[in-house]
Image (cartoon, rainbow, N blue to C red):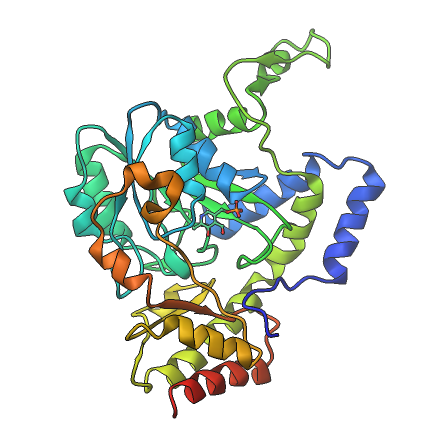
Length: 370
Ligand SMILES: Cc1ncc(COP(=O)(O)O)c(C=O)c1O
């Protein structure tokens, strides 16, 4: 079976992990600092805080920006549940909004209509790596005085008007899980230009512990620390950072290959009646997933057909307002409910061969009888 996602990892990553083993310092240390500096340079952003997952990046950022009981956070329903769980865990309220069916990114008109006096944050998602309209989004947020916490889990390497996602807004949260544009094994990062919030996030990452006062008063012992705020144990380990250090160096070619596959798919599928491809500007995109829309209630049938040809596919995502645990936040979202029944995710990963790409294309063509 051709998988839908797979990391591209090998001996170079193993070699870097071996070096960590040799130092005996497995937790957060010099590799994490090196990884953060690499990400900082790549994105052109002032602060990078590496954490253990994209989910914890979202949680800790919401928390550091003071999102709490009764606050509303607007986010598309059509996304992974990680951000929603983060909102709820803080006692805040997820307010679900629509996506634009042509891009799967947040529908800014619908989002604006849902802003109230309780809205404290907006959490957009750069779906599949396609950047949201950041100028308009940040303009609305600035006017309404709400913070924008980008769920950039899909979008490491994507740009908006030539600027890297992760360097533009208030704060962006990335995921480096096994199937993302590059991986740390598991990992995440918060990127932001604001030094004050970066410091707050750093403290929350390490159980609210600081050694700052020790650093200031050099006379105190090296074992001295202070717990100065509520926090979590969300730091990245040297083992994960070591994998990321190698992977980040390969990102340029990962992106080029993924773009090439997306372009091959688009060329093939745009001619097929019954399929809608998305209006994505590929040069701004580090494509994480390839999704298309299937007309006429045929999505599930197509997925079964692809499986019979040895091609795995998926659905990203089931809208959150339809999930049992989030049902109390359910609201009218007709565009989302229509589009999610049409979307299917096809294989997209760096190590796909040209033959793999051809297998996907010919299987889809066969399903549509062309
Ligand atoms: C949109 C989105 N946000 C957040 C996450 C969470 O990232 P992680 O798996 O690193 O916790 C994911 C993971 O797939 C995601 O797709």
